[in-house]
Length: 194
Image (cartoon, rainbow, N blue to C red; front, side):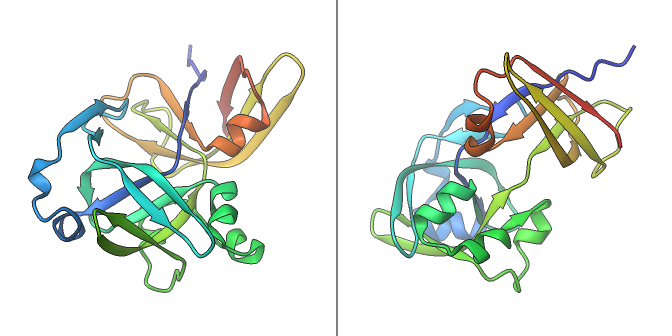
């Protein structure tokens, strides 16, 4: 029998860096040390935090996730984007579902990352909910629906992207703080196809 239950993993604001941008920001990126392994095999946070600067405000102590990517980008929640100064109509266009979409040169929404007086401008986006799984039952980039429940509420989230990752145990749902706060103390979560 197929187990469709999910583990919810709160996905806070964070940065992914390309090798070239890591070199520019830290001069010697090899001094970065692994801080904590994530549940996706091979991914980890590093022991350095950066500041993300927007039009109106900034966030200190933002996490960096390694290893490096083909391009740099910042992932955040809708609330984060509004606090940084993006207008509501801009925020609506900040959702994306795949890494290649956020790296598009036409995407056009950026933040500045600062570390010890060195500055770097990178794309910013609001991460859509997505699931990491190694199950052969689901296809990579398939869209599914997720139902999240607590004692008094039921929240249905559609168009959740499935990402196939070898070595992932079970199904891990990555959602941002806005969704976590929308249904506190969730105790049941399941995904299904349309």
